[in-house]
Image (cartoon, rainbow, N blue to C red; front, side):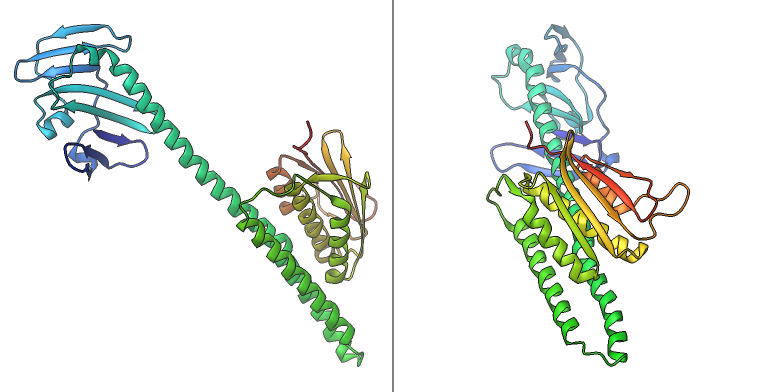
Length: 332
């Protein structure tokens, strides 16, 4: 068999006989890509050919069959099955079996279709794996940015405040304790992320969001010395585990952005079930978004889009006001 891939310029040759398969890679100039040809049963010594079209109709010809692959292996007689798939073009030559007959020629189109379908399935599997890896890398990048990176930024923010506190002669012991608690919380969160990546068993279908969001709010208040008020509606709002994780990461990123870029000190995060999924209403008392039109927060917008949702930047007299909608795919 010869295979000419649409992606790799090299020609892949495979010969299967009595022993192990022999596989070779040839440069593209060594074996030309075959032209379109019919299914053919040939005998070069007798100058005989039986040719079948895609509909299985057979006709006889008197000629010496020739194609670069047959010439390369010096095949005297056999059955040629051309293969076309989404990933490339191939030529399968069955030789050395005197039992091959016109009946096999009639089934050649079905054989070609089966092989092409198998190759397409392999291509789809390869693409799916690459997409899954790319999605995982993007998710990890967002998670590390919204949790670890933002927590470290918060620690740096508090270290500056601690320096001023020490210079003024105040006792920094309580501040050290709070920073230690913040780092311990982030360490626990990072271990949870690693554990989720390691797990092979199924996670719980849904979790109640209120308790988790209150823990996130406490963590953010310690990290950023800001007031963070969180509400959920209904109070027993339950969402899939993956969606709960995304909501928590959005809250972390929104508060970090508000403190660092908007000098906000108070935040209100309302999570509710809406007509099209889960709605997050996030407000702060900072300087808001400036510019015309005001720029959208890139990381938050990317996270919303990655989950099939949308972000809306609302007009506000004071501070920033964001509404983020995320679909809840657990709903019937």
